[in-house]
Image 1 (cartoon, rainbow, N blue to C red):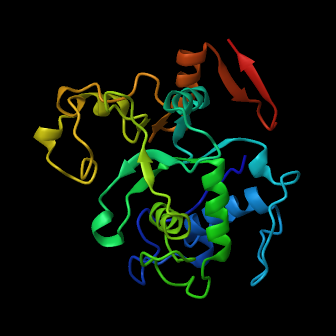
Image 2 (image 1 turned 120 degrees about the vertical axis):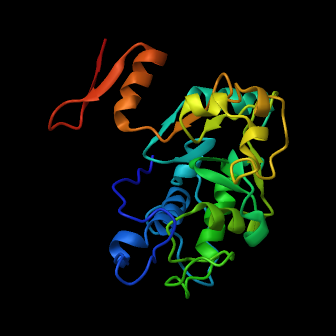
Length: 265
């Protein structure tokens, strides 16, 4: 598990005017941390950065061969790993096939040419993770001080979704797949659950959340969250304890000044 936390950044850009600009150390981190994390998972601490040299992935040492499915989640995302397993089994997918999936958004197709998986919870098969890490290892680094421009390269940017999607399409011809059940209900809730369950697409209009999505009856009737969801997003940590108690019957808490964990009834 590679955990990224305590990142100080603006939500949409690293530049919001000279008076508000954050330093490289606190701003230019989300995309770089994501791609470096995946390269680390596949290639190890050296990262495979030997330009012009083919780098072999060693199965005995690569973390990529210690699991079959991988996910990047935000710090405010609650993950249901068992439901991820149920979903890929239901889809009859293999980890040796290319799958890049989650809550797919289409509002960047017009300016970047790709649908993206929302960063709240982005899932990868092992085959896709290997392809992604290879793309990240080979992508240009020269203009890493510039904002992303729809190409696969290092960038001075506060998001990872677009560049990830662009790199996968460019280097492996892999595109985002929506994680929905047979009724079109989303497996990943991007907003408060009560909102997702009550939204009406016709009444709301085609804003970025709905843009380009295949239409299903639940979009207007409500109850458009899968009954065995894979992730809830946009929740403060205190709600995680409530989820643990509600879904699993216990709460996991850290002891004060101790990294160990205990389970309480």
